[in-house]
Image (cartoon, rainbow, N blue to C red; front, side, top):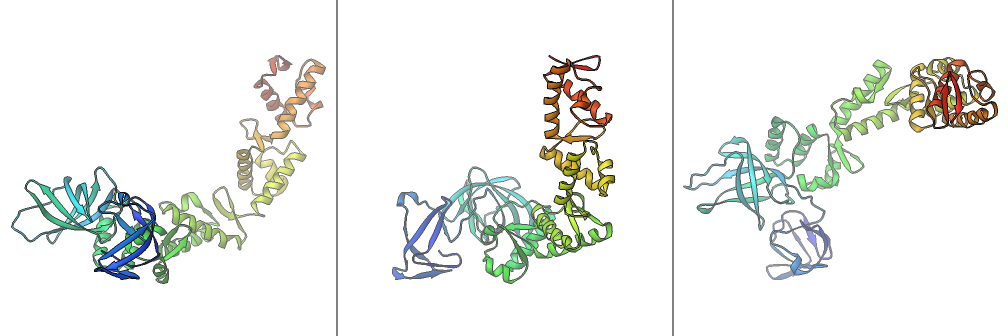
Length: 404
């Protein structure tokens, strides 16, 4: 049976759950060859690129890849018969979906007008559930079909029970766009290739309704994006900066990345830049500041900490702190003491080599002769000599460093 959409001869489709790409070689309806079939038709489909032995009862043909899941949400409908049957919470049952038998566990969420909302977990397999798919529930003693159900949503939901029930109720209204909006209210985003399997919606149709914003492989909620971008701009103007880690707390990660990208794009036009996870005003682009700090430290070893560099270059001290951290993480500078003094990594390596040569010439290195190889204030020379102690080249005797 064709569940939805249209299928044509020569179409390339997917066989699920095997996840194999196959080609439609021919179609027929009631023994008559046709060029296409559509929703509601019972069709015979001749497939190329696959052997009969690779086909199994219950396989699904789809125009796009479906994801296999072990969890879905369903509505269990009570049959009008004389058999007294009631779904048990955490009960294990056999279901017949398509032509596939599955062993499942039902977790009751809510009973509603004789029907039951459940979370259905497959115990020993996976299945490419599709929204709206029907199934039967069977018991073994006595052996009979006792109830039926409908897949409302084909994968796990990570939100509160109240959100889940509100969302499942929205799915009963059959307004798929409304249901998608409801889902995005608590999820923030959805993978674009999951739109059809989850809501039987085509991408173009979703975009026409302007309820989502495309972002790479995702769709994000347009409503939430507009809310957070306005909120973020207000924070930026009120505080003078925007702290990405703290000001975007409890937001979906994908939606959050898009908000930050668009906020930064907007803020750069107003003279802001991104420095260590903060969007803030600066005296120039961060890259330019980094270059200035490096140049300053290379000219003068005494330019070793945030206070001195900030005063020398007239740059906010907080920005200098972040620049030093950035350069340290890149390995371009090395912290030499607990007071927060830094030196260029290349200069430190040269100092150790020159100290070894000096020790060979004078027999030792100390605070007196070390100035022959490096012009630096005492606050830098002392920690540099102590760094020599940590190498395999020197030993310290009475504050003089001798080669081992």
